[in-house]
Length: 229
Image 1 (cartoon, rainbow, N blue to C red):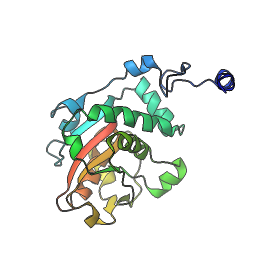
Image 2: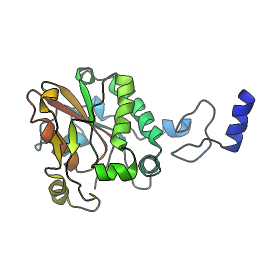
Image 3: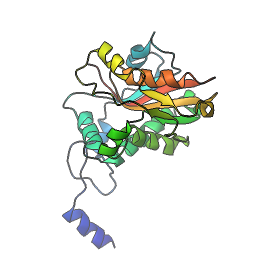
């Protein structure tokens, strides 16, 4: 069996989704070198950071954080490209597990009742085949042992791409695009709202506003990566 596995590995080597080098037997998704060099934000260790400033004065969120810094033409961009557009869903799950381990260092994460990923419009979901935020949420859920809910917060209107839009145009583009199907089901819950990349935070703000309409709800936010315009 080991000889067969070695032959398969020789003919079809697994590669690091970050740098493209071959992975060793004990490595998964990304190599040890890229794992060590991941540009972690460590925002979960502080109450005041770049992501909290994005939402300051705009919406009341209990906690905010992001796992990695996103840079143009960097390895994180390559990882997310492989994840979202090459349909390598296992990348999102793996990174979700990694971040969940870090998040366990915080006290507030123990209070979370439900994980809700930012939903895609059904037309985009049909084209892509999966929701990248949901895969990241699944990784978080696996370690944190908190259920993922995908049928309560829904996207009712398709928005245009946010790329190259100004901050105001991004907010205008996502205004009113989310709805709750059963608002009573999230009463008095602490919800972890999950997205892939935070830039202006307009999409998260629109989703959080809808969730906060439910009585007694608290919303915390985490993302796979954080970038600036």
